[in-house]
Length: 101
Image (cartoon, rainbow, N blue to C red):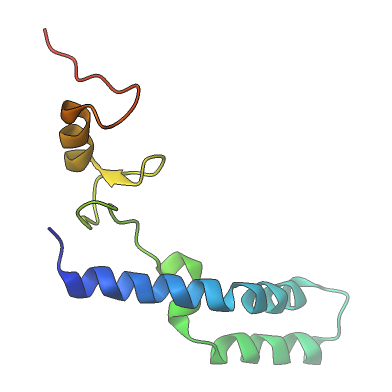
């Protein structure tokens, strides 16, 4: 089990990402638009720099929804490899069969 503080920190980052996603997208579009004057693009760049860093999507960490484990996650299922094995053995994941020979 991961530390509760690490899990809560990641949840806070997710809330910030959702809160600032639209504004960050608009500012990035202005910055990338070469047709606009350089002064306007520079102002947008400064405004983007003033926003909280944890509002950036790439600062999120993929964590297991069951245990909070930060490594070995399957994106499609949202669980770690260990939780996947446990849930699969119990038959809680449809279509997953643990093989044995």
